[in-house]
Image (cartoon, rainbow, N blue to C red):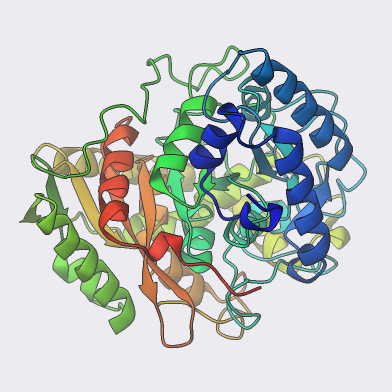
Length: 466
């Protein structure tokens, strides 16, 4: 197989070829580094490329594989991680100028687990400032490979762009208000936001501790399952990571949805949602029905209060995360993140407690829905394939970001797992997507649903012309 044919193979697929010795990890890693060097000057998806250590990791993996030791599906496979995840000795700027010289002395737990699984870390992927809405004014943001005028998503913009452009076989992103789901939808890839607590957050810069989720961004549901199986699980360094056993997310994939009930609130998902977003959700439900799923009408709890509450809650938690540098070094912050931190610092203790109570009530109401359904179907966002021009003031226009968060931040507030699946293209050429939401800690059901959908569709196999 020519090196030029490698980059769009699936993560699990390329791993199988490496493990069967049809390809070498070193060969594949060299091809990916060459592709990054050729294309990323324009796409800007990488904040830092770790070529030397990647080649060393690939050589080590190759030696083990040749000797017959295979650690799992990621062994020898080149992947990349969002910049906020620490990688020992590599810069971890968090999309900020303040941290541009920081080089951690240890790996984040998720990075250590990728390395222990034999994955090859190609580098650190660019992100918005502090993982909030906007890129820092001094950072050249990643470019959507489907069109330079299209929004690349936030905050895991580099992860979305690099994965879609074939500059890694999978990546890690984080999601606090939608930041795995937005770039997955915008770049036409598959993203899995796990249940809060499923994946350790140790060694990852915080935006908002009780809202932050780390998860995989890949080109298929199967590949998301493979990555999640590696990074999930309890961690003595982060006691908020739950002690539940981690299932084999690739086991028992049936290719159908028989016995699965999918809930849909047509009023909530339809009002204020543009035609393209409604269409892709409807086609996703039709495919699910053909695969054997039962569709059930539900009434989703009114999310308006928790969407409104997301901003001050995120601001309060972010203010704690940034208290060593904000407001002391406010001049070095961009306007979007600074505005969020100011909002958080303005809240009182009673304001915070009211938010906590409303959030807990909402979490309970969402949990009760799953007594009658297995999954909930929702759009990825209310308007399809937004342009950069439309979202130019994302961090400063409250109504714009509130609308954008409508189908994402409620599931950060509830901690629910979701999978974002490519489902078509808008008139402007931008990818379209929808989400399935699952019960807490039932990510296996999301992988099953995503895999079944992707066996009968090919949206996830479409790639940008580069």
